[in-house]
Image (cartoon, rainbow, N blue to C red; front, top):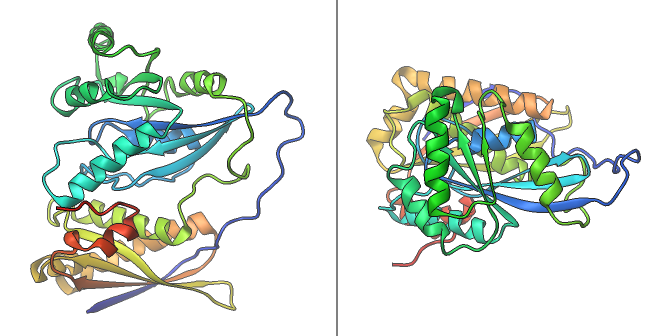
Length: 322
């Protein structure tokens, strides 16, 4: 077992604030599920719409493993955006759990937003998702992402091809990275969601517990640092969280891998990899929580953790049988 310590910060949740008294008219609220192929930009879009980081992002496909809910308020409407795992052809038990979670999120939402990478178009998984959406009966919105990378005439052809397969009630063209077109999407959803009370306090931006968000941040830094070197057989859990009298927080996290060779990769030569991961994670957690943190990372080998029901529960996934 290897250990690495650093310093930074984290509070629990900020106290809720009352609804803005200057707002008039009925409130609206609802759930919007973002679905799409892996790396379509769902997490980037959720973070953009919420206006803060609630979902981790990396260039590695299948980064999102369980549904993450980001909460945004636009005019009088509270929108709960469900960032779902990318939908793809599953091979492992974890893959099956992720895809099942994504489709389950879609069926629980008031609206479904299909996010399509405009550069990739309807090839492969995107086309298969369109077929699957025929069995889902919630109102569906088509959103073409990364429009700054594609010619306008090609975007129109892509929108037409998708709408010929599925009756979308509306089509939007956006760039989640730059924010282009995102306000139009927010305006539309704010008017379409049903009247009703808000589900969450006005200042809450996610339903993810702080312990889990901290683990997700470390997993993101792990992916960003190692990318091609470490396979998907890694998982991060926050095992201890201690609020200290001096206002700081002591956090202990475990990075689970399946083999000794993966442990060596995670540690790096002379511990350089784990130090860099810890430093980056600690810094971001500290910025989010505005509180000093003492972060301890451990790397443990747990063979076939992908077949352990407890690990699935920690990730917020149902354990697939068989």
